[in-house]
Length: 598
Image (cartoon, rainbow, N blue to C red; front, side):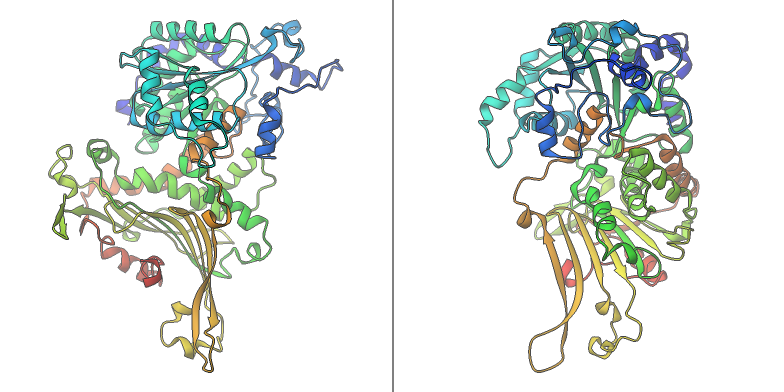
């Protein structure tokens, strides 16, 4: 991807000034740092919206420059050892020590969320609805504004009309939905401009300042744009539209490069204008309810934690499938493929969370440190442990489904895989020898994302004769269904009632929609709120990204250099037959092929 990035050197002359603007700590950060040395009178009144957030989630803290674990952000150091507050940042000390809630307008905080690429599908379908959902739940502060920025010519009213078509209220209908929508839309504004124009971002800054009205301003930029213009936008925003009184943060959407080299180049370019703590690399799968519940299930239940090792677990399967093809995204998808699109980020991040050692605390850096250890302990992927496939056209029930290369935006001779299965291994004491099987594909028979943990057979099982020759039926299995219909269930063996001795495999099932009827928040809601609070636990650090690409880049290079032809599979099928041979090679049967899971 390096060839697609803007040259970092093109704006190097303005690098220092832009870094100064972008990293300038707010008055609150400095006051937190000085607390160690000064005893100053202060007011303890909180903004009225803080208690509402705490009642929603007791682990969350106020927005006053603290992470959700309660640490002052001004005291946090970067993982590479560099200080978060650099020596050349010297704000006026007298201004920094002014009371937080003095009641004057200038001492109030205001938050601006700028969605760059506001006219795109992701912004319309996910980002704006997520911001509205936070507003509906009273999770946003009193003073906030939302700006859309894109090249498309549009007025504020036209943006509001576009947004309103995708907004939905919670199913509980606690509040008047129409009133809430109208209140939210009044806070939404639009500015049209080029992504590489400093002048256009200066105009955006003027509009932001008008809405901030002299208050202490925090600014969040969400880059919902192609990766080849990330650097241009960050450069312009850092020079012309960064906050001078509060923090400025940037959410970056995947893909983060195509391989180790392009990913490293992207990170280096971004860091000309941003510190690592200002970059929030989003992987929306980490914000899904069941993925976040994974560590809770393991670390807060004594019944599972002792079993979480090679001694009891036979294999772990991470399965992702979609029942539709590229559907108009063929041009984009053909440049990346299923391995880069799903496996290298979504599934690998889940694997790292699943397999990590117990972190020292729930602090973001402690958790991310453990994830990096897992990624660095993994055995390099070999071509013989990978199967790739591509869906072909298929007719079923009188309806025809197109093949991947039937998409007019895809080259007819494309070898880009739409399906991949891989066996990965972690070379450490806990997981040595346990196969972690991944598979991901498009145009399969069902839509699902799940984690399946198959436990070992019971040694000397007294009842194995009752299971016949299929000992897999006697194996306990823990399943975390991420989507659809979020659920956690454990497959156990029990006796069928009656006079004979017939055994059956049953589920202990926690179906979330039955146990928790309240609507589950979308992943983007959680991640947006975390970014505003400075909580980085569910975002990807640069060394995590490096370790992930180091694992997959050699494989991707070999696949492309050797022009490995993917195995064809019919649209709507279970995928290539080779995936089953790969599993059998490691003495594993895919858990989603049984009758009860079809």
